[in-house]
Length: 115
Image 1 (cartoon, rainbow, N blue to C red):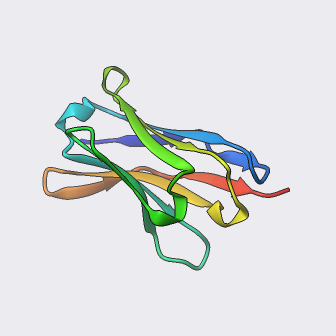
Image 2: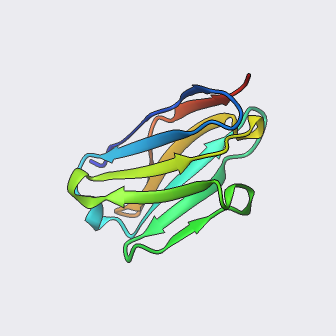
């Protein structure tokens, strides 16, 4: 059973930074890809960033230059570093990954950007 647990969300002022963590229950080396999504109220869930097994990353245009994704294989953890946060970044952030023919989601962590 795959479990993904996010942490690191909170309230931050515009221009601030947060680092989200996603801890997996097992080795992340087994995942072909690990994703960060977000969902704002009344909006569809959208892909923010992804990191594939080779280490290559992709970042959504809306956060390019401000967010980056990385991973620590020894800690079985994927990170989303978010800088220069804007009010429109306010959302619940989820990590997710395909495993065993199913896409697995974490429970999400709330990020609120407000003064």
